[in-house]
Image (cartoon, rainbow, N blue to C red):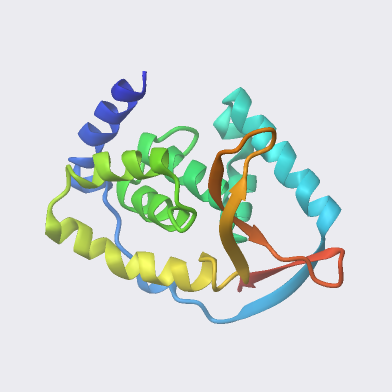
Amino acid sequence: MKRKIAAVLIAGACLMGNISQASASDAVTEVKEVKLRAEFYQNELDLLLDKARRGNFADFYQDVVKFARYGEKYPQYLLGVMLLKGDGVQQDIGQGLVWIKLALEQKNTEWRKVYDSVAGALTKEQLDALEPMYEAYKSLYGVEAQKMSCSNEKMEASSIRVHQCRKTLVLKEYYVVYEKN
């Protein structure tokens, strides 16, 4: 199944019309700091991830975008895959690759394989054309921009360690997010 998805993604990546580039409308005028109560934030994120497991992507696109912009890596990866496949959203290979590349700040081998399989079907010029969009997104939604930290954590009930990026609690009950206006 994964090979079939990769083949579809590679075929889609070859469609130049579906590779976007950063535009002037992507320019940010202002970024504001917002404090969100951690328990509500986490509950909403958990609900989103539960919807993702059920696979009805069209039902939660706006939530995926919101959490991707908050710097959460799994929603960034999900958004990237949704855009690559056109699942619940108009297909956009370029933007999908940019979101997946940003999600790779959390080192994940499966995500890397998806990114590499699609990026491998593009020319150097196409990939270079996406770099300004990646840098712009990273400056807004990356680990540093969203004041997150990444580390190797032990998986629950296992000795396996995985690389995770997480928000840091402020005043023991808030997460801080940075939203663009």
